[in-house]
Length: 239
Image (tube, rainbow, N blue to C red; front, side):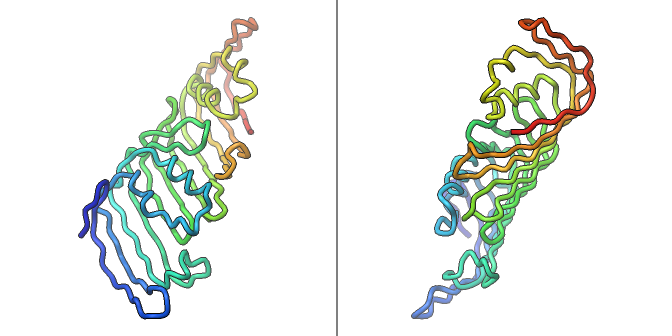
């Protein structure tokens, strides 16, 4: 068993340190409790891009690791086993996560997620959370290769017209239209979904494809003497 600042658990297995070669390991670890920020102590930094390291260190703001487990088997010279020379897998159940997933994007808070690390990649499924009043119903986030460092984020959820507009205004999507958006008010309710591809070394080079379905939304812009009542239907957005 082990207990350190921010985490604790158990580990068992063996390490073969025969002369003339790197250690051959066969380890299984269980994390019984921990803080998400402590995860930065375990990144395989020699196989990660600088952008991936920076994103993980900045992005995982807070949260609790309710449980976790990891297996590491193979010659450490071959880690992270890109050609199946060994095995590395880890899984963590996370609650109340605060995720700062991209510079200039609104944070996601109160996230419940299961994170899987396989080889040199990360795959996350989240079942709940919120961002600026929008409720997140389902989210997947993947970084297939930490060396390449591209975040593939898919989100679906629901909210009000006002919370939709607030999210857009506080994201890079509004970088060229914030002044105009500040003059608008949007009512009603709706559902939304988007796919964000975010290169971790250059967050400004993102691509975004999204859609929303709004119901009974009133669009008001007094300065332009504009009022549209009870708008219902689909809409699309990109960036």
